[in-house]
Amino acid sequence: MIRSYIKERRSWILLFVVLQLLALLITYVDSAIPLSSVGYYTFLSSVIFIVFFVARYYRETRFFKELEEREEDLDMTSLPEANRPFEFIAEKNITEPIETLQRRSASLQAQMDQEKDDLLAWIHEVKTPLTAMHLIIDRLEDRQLKAQLTHEWLRVHLLLDQQLHQKRMPFIENDLYVEKVEVEPLLFSEINMLRSWCMQKGIGFEVDAAAVTVLSDAKWLGFIFRQLLTNAVKYSKDGSEITITSSRQNGKTTLSIRDHGHGMETRDLPRIFDKGFTSTSQHDNKAATGMGLYLARKAASPLRISMDVQSKLGHGSTFTLTFPKANEFIEIQGV
Image 1 (cartoon, rainbow, N blue to C red):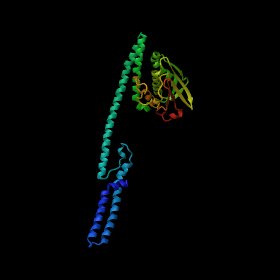
Image 2 (image 1 turned 90 degrees about the vertical axis):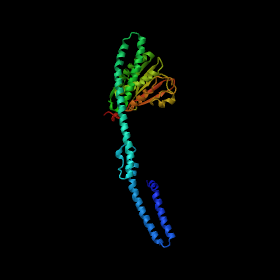
Image 3 (image 1 turned 135 degrees about the vertical axis):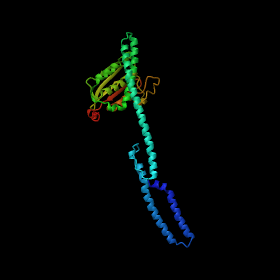
């Protein structure tokens, strides 16, 4: 700060030096003026100037020192108190943009909340005719037509469900209810939802998760299963089988979902959980949204579930969920 202050006040220093040199020049030109008197004046004025300069340094830099040490945030209470005219100008030019930014942020947040509420309300309203449509489809006697309509109905249902959970995702920690969840019944419930799609593709399931109980939130865990199973069915080859197995490793429960689909390129694996990422080798797949695995990983994070994938192009993929130990839930059981 001292260097910056000297650089800022270099015109003062230069003026003082010029005045002292001028006094010495006058003494040199006019021999009637005693050199000792001018030297005494020069020394005394230099001491006074140094004391004045140091005093002004501490007074004028206090505000800017505190401003420099301040956290880079929008909290105006952390701003140092202004006492001098230029400090008031600096303070005004800092606080006014912050206040404008906060007002705009509050307005945008209110607008986003309103849009979210409107979308959630619309999704809930759409569920009513979708339910009625499903009942109508169930009454159809033409099996082929019924299977086709059920498949399309399921696609709409899954997209709406994904959108609903995506909008709830920012507030997931307020919605968690951690309890003991039996994995197998939850898996069968999600598989049953995809039954018509699986029958259309001739895909079967082999589930080995009996007597597996984990600490989690049943609703959000079901959502994670739904995204992984949907992904497995979507990319599985017709007539193939999806295998679901469980195990215990280092005191933790793991659940693996393996499909026999196209598999993924090695270069794609680090990016498959990124928002909007589909594939670098299957750009012709217009049905892919790049949201399912992203939302599954995002939902798994507050549940302390780690998610890993192993895949090889042409040999399918295996997604593994590793559930936390019981004592790792101390932080979120009170939610």
